[in-house]
Image 1 (cartoon, rainbow, N blue to C red):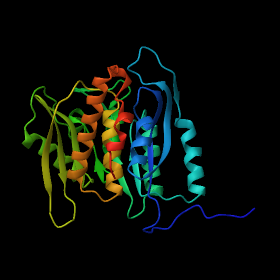
Image 2: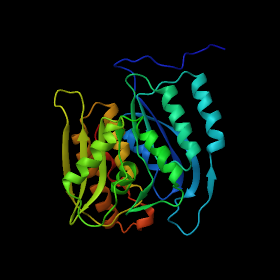
Image 3: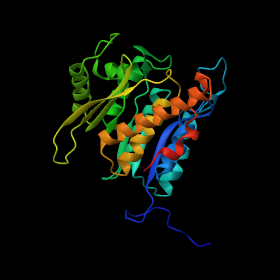
Length: 291
């Protein structure tokens, strides 16, 4: 049988690839279920590493859950044998400290000089950590975000990463800047604090100390709030950010693109009377997303 080289050398004609480490949820439109089509639409091959298999996400009354931790090592081991390379590595929900350790090893083994690493530190929302997120996991997540080039926490997760007390009400731009700088000082050059409540608007705070001649840039982008919060929007947002970073799109432009697209998704979901638990019907507007 003819042996074919599976690893690829960098080149302008080569399709770019992203390894995305997260859970696969069959119903409810979140995690890898939305990441795969969104990243693919932006002309990047999405290569999933499942952390768990769920029949549907946990906001439903019941669900099937299969923890994939013990199989991740063998799964990733085959990729090592194939000498696979990736232009980007992204992480979503991680269910245990052990999974975070596996991801850190993955980044160490597969990262090249030009690989973009993005961590979405999924730990909590609305001032509370998720049930599965222990203090040990929060400490380990801080170490993982330090390995990243881009980090996309929401306000609650930014507070956890920076040991900042969470408060209700409007967040001042100076508070957001302080948290973003704190996170950036641990390692990543780009930080996007997402889903900031601003009355009738939703904000995303971009902090970018990219070496592109502009120095450190920070901007609070606002978009008019439409409908209610829905499952999976954070996964769509981080997927756009990762694919755009691989494609060389500037962070502030990418954040605006992601926010505008999610607004279109929510507006369409409201029009079609899609239940909140079913996420957003992004399929209806996916053609509007451009690489």
